[in-house]
Amino acid sequence: MTTTAPAIELKGISKAFGPVQANKDISIRVMPGTVHGIIGENGAGKSTLMSILYGFYKADAGEIFIHGQKTEIPDSQAAIAAGIGMVFQHFKLVQNFSVLENVVLGAEDGAMLRPSLAKAREQLKTLAEEYELHVDPDAIIEDIGVGMQQRVEILKALYRQADILILDEPTGVLTPAEADQLFRILGRLKDEGKTIILITHKLREIMDITDTVSVMRRGEMTSTVKTSDTSPADLAERMVGRKVLLRVDKQPAQPKETILDVKGLNVTDEAGVHRLKDVSFNIKAGEILGIAGVSGNGQSELLEVLGGYTKANGEILMNGAPIDLTGATSDGQSRRARGIAHVPEDRHHEGLILEFSAWENTAFGYHHDPKYQRSNILMDNAAILQDAQEKMDRFDVRPPNPQLAAKNFSGGNQQKIVVAREIERDPDLLLVGQPTRGVDIGAIEFIHQQIVALRDKGKAILLVSVELDEIMGLSDRIAVMFDGQIMGERLPAETDEKELGLLMAGVTDTDKPHTIEEIEQNLAHAGAGATKEV
Image 1 (cartoon, helix red, strand yellow):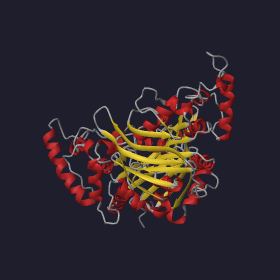
Image 2: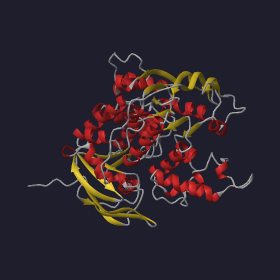
Image 3: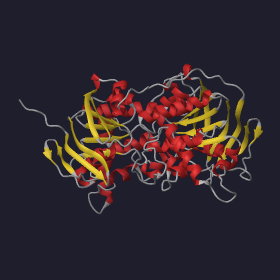
Image 4: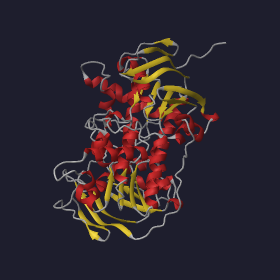
């Protein structure tokens, strides 16, 4: 009897970066023609392992076998030659090149481009028909939506003859309809015998699409199970090492007086693009207003205006008093003085100075606080250090060392530092953008608890997230943004992800059936907005 060799087999893979053991004696088998999920907390070693498989890193120890043959993969070219393709979370596309040019780039047949482009055009037509990966080969990347861009990345891999595909957090920037379409494509690829490795923190996706799932914890492979033999709760416990509450535990909101009132807000950027278009809404004390939408449709600009970073036209009332939008007396410090705290979307560029210590980061923006001052010109570093230690203890930051540089904490613990700094100021209004982006499931549970606790103290919260599960679970009301506009407002109990997904794609007639092509046309209409990185 012939035994089918694994498409991929890793034996005893280890990799250290200085004193940090990223991968420790990892062995895994991925069978051909299957979808194999890999999950784990931040810092569990998933990305390092896949980077070794794709040739970005060289393992300190261990062996790689592709279809039963021992294979050396010193770089990505060797990985491609071995039939491995990788679709990264942040696409590797040249924005002002066409689809066709991006597919051919790096895989030209010779110095003359025309024959390569002609050959690629024919192959793209064949691949599109075979795998339902339809895309206009002459479209410019910056003019198409993120769902189409992801198709281009998959086409690039297939054009290079990949029969093993690695996808890293593939649905992070997709609408629900686009995610469903992606999974149909992956199912088609699987049916054609392709092998797929899916890295995601979304347990529902693991349950829906994978055949087998492997769990990593602290650099080790702790278990591999058939997906049909497990559950989201079981996988969460395997990842974290304890039981995790997968739903947001909160009581119904008790909204009171209006804290924030936004009327007719408009923002035009330096390139003349209208980013916010007559945006109006309000938030009351004791409630969470969630803003849903595909990244780049005005949510970032809204947070920037409210946080004091961007000028705007319109009117904003905070506790009944107007806020200056001209920039004359408006900045982050003046917003904090008005009782507005801000957890920004991008913690690395807006929330932290990575080279500075944790204790210094806990004081940023609040360094004029009298309790941090020793005199008019000197800060009381001992007081800041003590305060930082107390914040880290209350928010379970690991390791609880305020002297450690921010860059040396995992993403989840970096986020806890930012959240602790802002929530501990007891603001009237908390602006929170992508609170759990890149955060593992244990830290997600904790951050959600802190946001709900602040709401229950009678504070107003504006939540911006591309994660619909998060929006549905945390919000008391949901507003949906598309192309700089509020498309509609819904109550979580009276809507579902399908309706919200259509609104996120600019479809207001949610009772009518819509094709994925219609949705993609709408997203493409949003143009640069829909593909803008936060």
